Image (tube, one colour):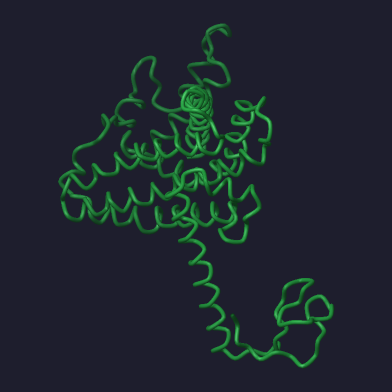
Length: 317
C-alpha cells in the first residue's frame, strides 16, 4: 500500500466527491498530496511493476496448472485475482513479438554457423538468369513482355491479373538475386504482420466455437472469446519457451535441447484438448468429437488467413 502523505481536505481531486477513507469510493483515486518527489515517483513505479508482475506470474501458473480453469473463473466473476484476459493477451503477444524481432532473430543470426549458410534450405533459383533470359517467348524486360502481348490476338493475351503477376515477377527478378533471398524477406514480412492478423483472427476463432456449441445452453459468444484469448496466450508462452530452447541448442551445439520444442508443441495440443473438455464440461466421447470438428474448422480458417497473408506480403514487397 502507498505510504504517501494524505491531504487534509476530504474532497477528491479527480472527481470532486467526498473521500471518507484513504481512497475515493467513487473513482478509486488515493487522496494524497499532488506534489511528489522524484524518489516518490520512482518508488510508486516500482510498486506498480511488482504488483503487476505478481498478478502476471500467478495468472500464468493457474493458466498451465489448471487447463480451462482460468476462463471459468473469469466468467464466474473472479476478475480481480488474475489479469484481465485482453490485457494478459496483449502483454504476452507484445512481449513475444518484441523478443522475437529484437532478441531472438538477432541472436540466431549471431549464433548461426557460417558454414551452414552455403547450404540453402530451398532450391536456389536465380531470377536474373532464369526469369529474365533474352530468349524467344521469354522477354528480357516487362516492357518487352507488353510489346509481345500487344502483337498477340486478343483471345491469346494474358488477363489483367496475369499481367500483374508477371509484372511483380520481373520486379522481384530485378530486386532479389535468387529465391532464397526472396523467401527470407517474404517470411520476415509475414512475421511482422502476424501479430495484427492474429488479433483480427481471434473473433473468428471464437465464432467457430459459437457455431460448434450453438445448441449448448449457458455459453455465449463472450464465453468462447475469453477461452480463445487464454488459449492463444498459452500458445505465445509456449512459443517463447521454444525460441529460448532453440537459441540454447544453437549456443551449446546440442541437438537434443531443440527436440524438446517439438514435445512442448505436442504437449500444448494435449493442453488444448484438456482445456476444451474441462471448460465446456464434456464427456470424453463428446470432447473428442467436438474437438476434432473445432480443430478442423479453425485450422481451415488459419490456412485461409495464412494464404491471404502470403499473397498480401508477396504483393507488398
